[in-house]
Amino acid sequence: MTTDVNPQNNSAVASSAESKRTGNPVFNNGPLSVLVITLLVQALVTAAVLAPAVIAPAIARSLGLPASSLGIFISVVYISAICATLYSGTLIGKWGAIRTSQIGLLMGASGLALVATGYVWPGLIGAALIGFGYGPITPASSHILIRTTPPHRLSTVFSIKQTGVPLGGVIVGLTVPPQEAAFGWAWAICSISVGCVVMAVIAQCLRAELDQDRPAFSRQSFIASIVSPVRLVMSHRSLLTLAGCSFVFAGVQQSLSSYLSTYLNLDLGWTLLAAGFALSVVQIAGMTGRILWGRVADGGLGVRKTLILLAVIMLAGCIATAMFSNDTNHFWVYAVLILFGASGAGWNGVYLAEVARLAPQGKVGLATGGTLAFTYFGIVFWMPLFGLIADATGGYRMSYMLFCVPLLVCLGFFFRKGDQ
Image 1 (tube, rainbow, N blue to C red):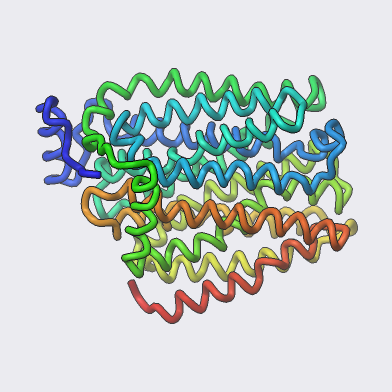
Image 2 (cartoon, rainbow, N blue to C red):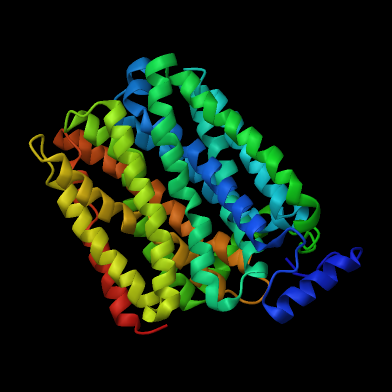
């Protein structure tokens, strides 16, 4: 895939050239509009993924399935997301980043509607659609933000944009359980579907401007399109190291986002409303953490040391969460979960900014798609295993201990690699 701008649009060429020369955005709508739109798009597609997870016990009871079957749903979502992520470079080149994001939002909305039918097979097809919609969103936003962000602010700006992920969790945690209690789980899920459609309409206000400057569409085969991002990552050791560690970090993050409510509800006896509120607190901590860690990385600590610190806090969070009991004071539960959320849901912005920085010129979308394939495969791998351990042990405590050894391995890689 080439990175040439459409030669039929001279204004786009001039805009791109000026942006690359100065390192500053030249869009009429300004960098704040770009950041806000990409953040909100990320929040809504994330909400589409998490909406079924936060009320999984209620859905499982309705379908006659164990709550641990959520792992299968999440795996279907992220297997589809892997395919869509790897193909995202081609989609961005053909349609532009904003149009790709709009299509992702509409696919997420359609997937939720299928889940809300209350039947298993349509629900699994819906899970696949949600994943296909989720996959291209981050590469699309990276394609935009790398052109609008000065190099010395990359970690901060990418971290702010990535607060859309925990923001999606906050939206779900605060709105879905109350609606489930009042109107039933199907209506609660459909409300998020409507939100995705509304966001797709709002994003249209920036499309004419932001989608002018897009790579020329490459007519390479589908197989070549999805192999190219992986080949790019495999050929760059630093990118491969980041991708490998994200494989583990993603499992930790998803265990918080998808299983925390179920753990608090079934193992600790919290109500779904209380568990949903706790999830929102964790996601708010993740939002705060993303901005904080971005500033820390940009402010002198550096990416490697920041990721080491995050891995250490995640490790402590896994152990502490596994030690909760019915008698644990809620103050201590919240204290642990806030620190755990700030790290387990706070690493993505630093990671994605470093991927964008290390990517060859003109291949940020391709490199982001390739590394995210490893990230999403981590979720596909860890979540079913998380559920199986929960079934085998009769609870979720040992499942959180699952990540201790992989996190130690990540720390070993970071310490061995030295400063990047």
